[in-house]
Length: 117
Length: 118
Image (cartoon, rainbow over all chains, first blue to last red; front, side):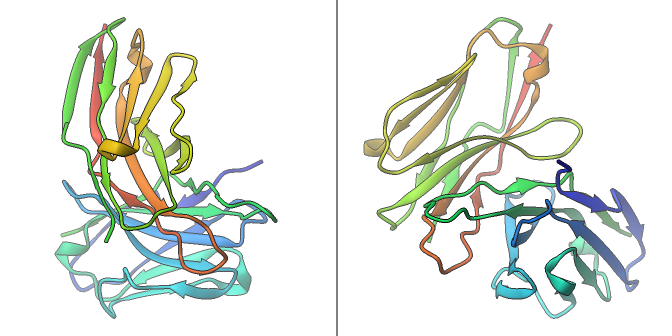
C-alpha cells in the first residue's frame, strides 16, 4: 500500500510568487491534515479535512494560504503571494478512524521544503 | 491549551550506548493520546508508538521502550544498545482522544536530534 505522497519535494520561489503544494493521502483515508515546521520551531497544525470538507482550519496563518481537497482525494495548499516567513517544511498526514476505535494514527508524507527568497 | 516540551535539542551517543529522550506534556484533557515519531534524514515522519492516558504500562518493542508516568506528565523514550541507524530527529506529540468531533490535531514538541556515533 502506498504511503502519503507529497509534491514537490522542494520548491524555491521568490517573494510575491505563488506556489501550490500537493498531497496524496493513503487510499481510503478520509482525514487529511496539513502541518508546517518553520526552522527551529515545532511542527504546527494548519488544517484538517474530513473528506472534502474543512473540519478545522484554525491553524492557517492568514488568508494568503488556501487549501482545497477536491472530491475528497488529494489536497492542494496554495500560498499566494508567498512571503519570506512562509519558508519551512510543509507536511501532510492522513488517517482513518475505524468503527468503534477510540484512537488513530496519522501517517505522514515526506514533506515539501519551501524556500522563499 | 496543550503543550509538549522536549528539553533536549541534540544528543550524541556512541554506538551501543543506551539513550533516553525526554518528553513532558501539558493538557487539560482527562483522556488523551501520546505519540512518538521518528524523522530520519530522508525527511518523512515515521510513527513509532501511540499511548492512551489510561494505560500507564511501560511498553517495549525490541530495543525501544517507553516510560509513561502520568504523575510527572512524562512520556520518555529509551533506545537500548543504540545503532547508527537510530540517528534521526525524534518528535513527541499529544492529541485529545477521538470522540467523533474535532480535528484531533497533533501538538508536537520541538524534537530531539539524536546522533549515534560509530
